[in-house]
Length: 74
Image (cartoon, rainbow, N blue to C red; front, side):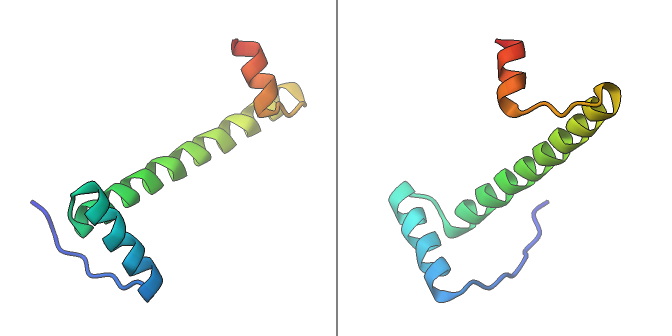
């Protein structure tokens, strides 16, 4: 079951949400819902990345860059 959450935005952000909703043909709630979902996913991925970097650093004494990882898995 959905629950209502009330939030406030500065006028410029509110206008951007309204413009995007109109452009995509969806509701403001859908725009905000999608944005929050993406934010939560990104936050979790950043936390997992940080954890992985720390484990690798602890195991190897070396910090791998994103480029290093890309090179290894390519």
